[in-house]
Each structure stands twice: as C-alpha cells, then as structure tokens.
Length: 275
Image 1: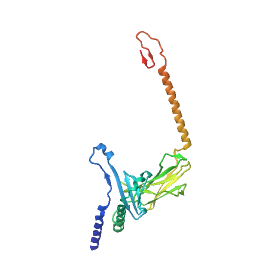
Image 2: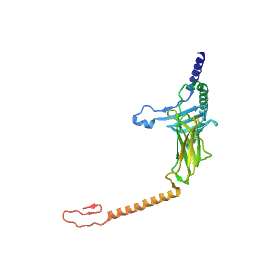
Image 3: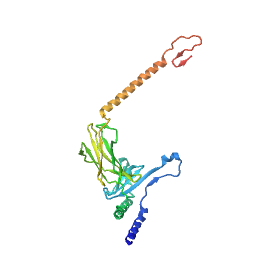
Image 4: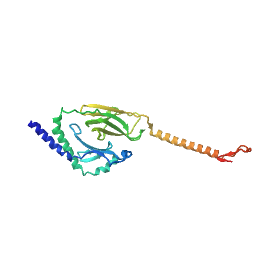
C-alpha cells in the first residue's frame, strides 16, 4: 500500500509541472459570422515528443498541418522545412523552454513509462508511403522527388532511397510533423535530374515492429524538355495564325459592299448598317 501511495505522490509531483509546458491549440478569433469561419480559424501545433525509439526526442511546429519547422537538438536551433522559412529561425528566445520541455518529456518516459507498460493499449499505425515530383516532370531538368509518409505512429522510422535497386547516397534529413489526432506524417526529399529509364523507390521502415512500406516512382506522361519547348512554340504559332485568319475574315465581312435590289417597302442591309 505504501509503495502504491509513493508512486501516486511521484506522479502528482510530475503533473504539477505540466502548467509550465506551452500549449498547442486552435487560434480562434472572437465570435464571428459563420461565413467567416473558414477565413479566421486556423491551427498552430507546437508538439514536443520523446520515445524509446529513434529519434528519441523531437519537435515539430505546423500551421494547418503544414510543417514549418523541426528542431535540431544537437545544435539547439530550429530547422526550416522549406528555404522560404529560413529567416524565421533567427528567433531563438524560447530555446531554453524547448530544452526544458524535452527534459521533462524524457523524465516522464523513463519514470512513468515502465509502470504503464502492459496496462494500457498500445497504438500502432502502419505507415503508408507515396512518391511524387515537386515540379512538373521534364526530362533533363532538375527536379525533386518527395516521399510522403502518412498514418505514422509512433514516429520511429527510417527512410532509404534506391535508384534501380541501388542505394542512393546524400539524401537529406526526414521531416516528421504532428497532425491533429496525435498522429504523425513525414517527408523525405531527393534532388535528381529525371531520365526516361529512371526507377526510384522510397523504403520506409517502422522501427517499432520492423514493418516496411515501399513506394515506387517511374516517369509517366512526360515530354523531353526540348520537345516540350517545340510543342509550345508550335501551339503559340498556330494560335497566332488562327487569330490572323479570323481577324481577316471579320474585316472582309463587315466591309463588304451592299448587294441586292430595293423594292417598294423593303429594306436593304449592308454590313452592319440598315436602311
């Protein structure tokens, strides 16, 4: 009995610190008409997570489920998902609060996690992967392959790229972000120059249960860049010729001379004029 009371007291002491953590939630304006809801209701999520797997700790910040930043704990700085967000990483005034949150999260896992092991249901999400290009596909033009991973929980995963079944080196970091419902999604990016014979695969391994999802990418409905340019030029030239022909016909029609005789009580039309 005394052992159970001591565990309960320790848990209460930890929970008393929760008020120090930043909260995530919907950013809502004051009461507005229904027709303005879609314009003024947005969600910003600042999510700190820790776990036994890899990564052991992480942070993601999303706006309407689009990730803005992750956090590099080795350098104690935010990492923008897109280069356009880089200027916002200069603000680091909350770095100490982030480190406190991660330390508290890890303490919760280490002290309370073993007590709950086998006593509560364990959620698992088998990841789903898909691959697509960031820009319209043109052979010979630099592009980026995106491997999008959904239905991810917990966020313990490794992403590997292959080209014709051979590992691809130099792949950038995998960006993991939390979404509503306490599930996760991830993005991995691969810069490449597409060729007609390309076959790429994105292999996502869920480290908890060693489940692996594989998504393949092959070129489809693409035109070589020089052929595409020729087609666009030909189309523009054809539209120009068609415009000249239509304009000429209209000029001739509206300027044609009057024709036909005039009888009593009848009118004669001539172009756009009436008598």
